[in-house]
Length: 177
Image 1 (cartoon, one colour):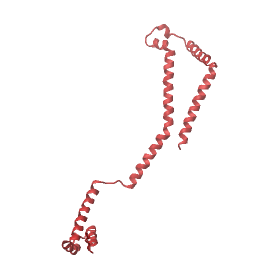
Image 2 (tube, helix red, strand yellow):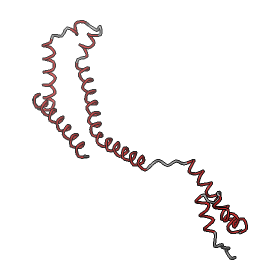
Image 3 (cartoon, helix red, strand yellow):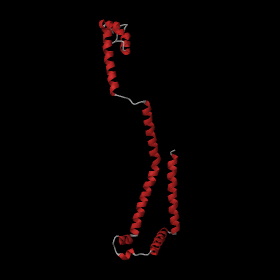
Image 4 (spheres, helix red, strand yellow):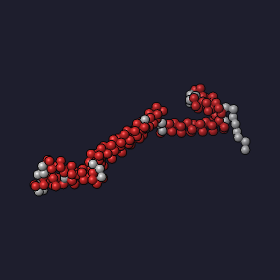
């Protein structure tokens, strides 16, 4: 099968693209296309393709390159913020957990006094302030004996451990920058 070809096909396409097809400038090329089977098919296909292109342009509006760039930069900044705050969030959760454990331990330790505040036996609530100091000293001494160390040593070890955790969290945050 031989493919038909016309020397004026490109003129028809150019006239359709430039908008001369519909005006007075395109009268000669329209007459030719009406008599030439190849050019009439080219005009029909080009018109259909142009209509489809106009519909596609009307339906889909692509955002500008600047907007896409800005959104990608914003997304990258948010991801970096999340990575940077992960150690801080971890340290906060650890501190909250230790705080809850401390409150539970203190509540169990001072339960008779707490029960006295809520209308329990009045005698348990009348522990003198010196009794609280003695009780806490007794608690630390008992804890120290359990570990075989003095109470001051235990407090210093706890403070050192806390400072080490803080230093680790600070290093993890600053390392990401």
